[in-house]
Length: 76
Image (cartoon, rainbow, N blue to C red; front, side, top):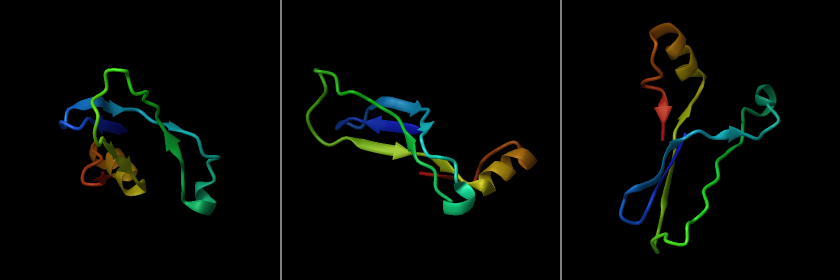
């Protein structure tokens, strides 16, 4: 998931789902590409924006199956 914070630290996108755009060859490359889009509105504040992306690897996947939670395997 993705969160974008404006220069004041306020979220302009909060925990948005991302779409996988890679070919799914994780067995070979161990990589997937994801994307999400956000267009700056004309009223967007000037300054630096912060993008945070949360990811879960296979450890989190199996933790969720066994324990019902991804924690502690969520990385930002």
